[in-house]
Length: 304
Image (cartoon, rainbow, N blue to C red):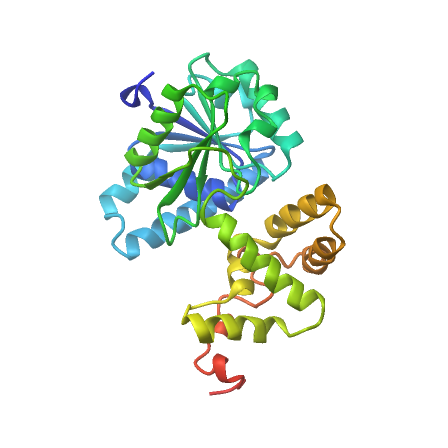
């Protein structure tokens, strides 16, 4: 298969990242089908996709005509067979658990055409952890996106069993949807940017979980020295605290690291309350007007 033959893209998981990825594909001319476990999840996801696309139009990223054409390319289904029918490429954004990813890919292997390329948006796992379970390991490659509202940088990472032609095709597909492609020559947990970012998150969480300093002061330290618009906890809110907890807890248990487990438990207290960050309106900060955006946040003042 070559890039011209890719027409239908299936998004597995209609959560925050799946929503953004599908919209990016539809904006660049691909027919997009969202698949998730229930109609309720899909309806909520499509509503958020519509809101995001409308915001893109308000900022000039899409013209009114392009907005209409983009949304016309998007559909959704809770029927896996319907989603898989005539699929050319799959982008997976299910929870960060290799067993879950393996089960989902195995399910779609039985339903998809032989030509279908499988890609995973995993942010910290590596494809060889579930490649064999997909039953088409040669057609599996990681295609990892960041927050598409702010950046189009993506990572393309094959595993040792990926067909080089598939790696090249995924690279070409990423370019075709307007992305800046970072190629990895070997598997690496966290890819390129996330490897650096995870170290920042670990340090920030360690400082907070040990009671060294408050969430706000840790962010002030980062923002005040680097001149960045938000600190590590603000970034974690954007990523989503359920994702941050899942990754932190997984690696804490895998490595048997008590310090990392303490960090995971620190995030879990927010997750248990349903405070998952930006997408729920509350996490380490309250949205849509988080404290770190306040004029006097760096000085520690609460009022202007």
